[in-house]
Image (cartoon, rainbow, N blue to C red; front, side, top):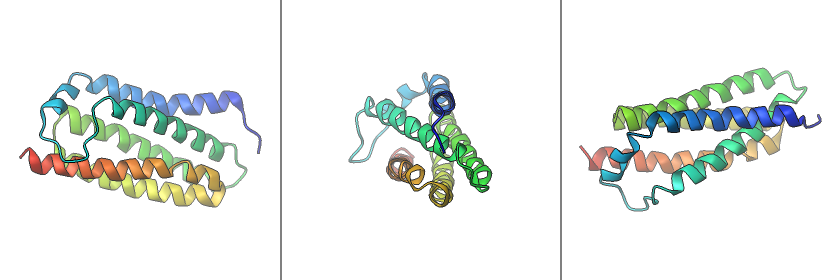
Length: 155
C-alpha cells in the first residue's frame, strides 16, 4: 500500500469540493443563521468554515488510505463514505436554505450513524483511516446539539 499523490489530491478535492459546493449553495441563507437564537456553546460563525475545511481534508486523506488498500472490503467502506458525504451535503441545504431544522436534525442523526459505520468499516481496513474520522464524528455530535437546540429555541 503506497500513497499515490494524484489520488490523494483528488480524494481531498472531492471531499473539500462537496463542502465548498454546499457552502456556495447556502451562502445567502447563512445570514439567517446569524439572526437565530442560539444555544450556549455556539461558536462564532467564522469557526464553522475553518473546522469544516479541516474535517473535509481529513475525510479525503482517510478515504484515500482506504482506496489504495488491497482489502476486498474497501468498495463497501467507500460506499458508506460516499453516502455520508451525500447526507453531509444534504444537511446544509435542508438546514440553511430550507430552514427545516427538525428535518436537518434527523439527517444529522442518520449522518452520525453512517459516520460510525464508516469508522467501523475503515478500522477493519486501515486503523489510521478510521482514527482520522473521529474529529468528524465529534463535530457532527456537537452540530447535532446545536441543530436540535436551534430547532427548539426558534420554533
